[in-house]
Each structure stands twice: as C-alpha cells, then as structure tokens.
Length: 205
Image 1 (tube, rainbow, N blue to C red):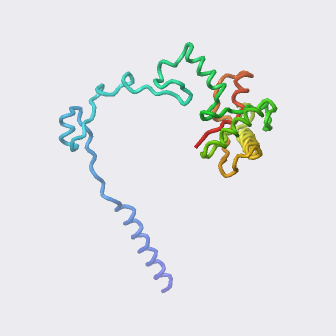
Image 2: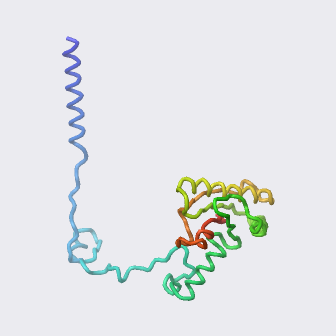
Image 3: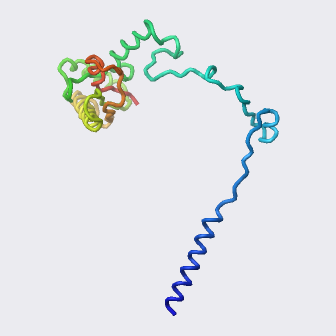
C-alpha cells in the first residue's frame, strides 16, 4: 500500500512538471519588416526600417575616435605631426587627469624612483587644492604573466597612495586599481614603449 501511494505521488508530480514545462508563455508572432518602408510603417506602428543597401552603410557611419585621441574630430589628428604630438602628450600625461602627471617605474619594481619625487610632490600639492577623490591606476609592461603584472600594478598603486598620504593627502580620498598589462599606451615591443607602460596614473573622479 505504501509503495502504491509513493508511485501515485511520483506520477502526479511528474505530470505537473511536464505540464508546466510544456505550457510556458504564449509566443507572439514575429512580423519581419518589409523592404518597402511605407508598408513597414503601416504594419509596425510607424517604425520605418531602412531598405537593403539604404540608409546605413560603412561609408556613412559616424567616425569613432580612441581614448588616446587629443583632437575632438577624431580624423585630422591621425598621422603626421598631430600623431607625433599625441605620442608626446602620452609621454607627458599618460592617462592622468589634467594638472597631474604620471610616475614611472623601473623594470619589475614598485618603489617610487628618486627622479619621480618632484612629480609626486607636485601631484600632492595639486590634490590638496581640489576636493575630489583620486584613483591611482597601476600599470605594467607586457613582460611576465597577466597575474604577476596585476599584482605588480597593485603594489605600484599602493606605494603611490602611501607616498601621497605621507605628503599630506587624506587617505579617504584615494582609491587604487591595478590594470597590469591590460592598458598600454605604447604597443611596440621596445625598451622605450615598455618604460612608458610601467607607470601609475592619477585620475580625478
């Protein structure tokens, strides 16, 4: 008798489960847009779709720039003297906010170099004059594993934060983040490019 009740309960549970899975929600019919925009607008409540080869093409899409562009147009600054200025800008400012300068590190090191001390002092003085919070972004070149470089970038960001705190910047205003090797400014496999990618940027929030 016990077995019969258990089997009956299992059959009922299985039937309910199958019914729930097979029922689901009612599907709405999908009406594809017609190539004629007037017909499409009449069937879709006023939404006009471009015809094949019509309004959209690769030739008339908006031009997109990059984060590293220094011009507002995204076109005129590519190549030539403007491209060289872009490299100069990246060398001087990295991805740091206006009024702040990045600091650079030796290979596989996280300590602040003596030649970067003046930059750290200038950055600290600037930060004392503004109320905003700061993100210190630790970066590395692409030699070594991604995991190792993330850890090294974190050490660099933390050392910069501690240095700023020693110079009088409030600790609560500083956050750190490590990008490791993920956000290089220069992509060449040269000593110069590597030296520019081993840096900490100062970004005002």
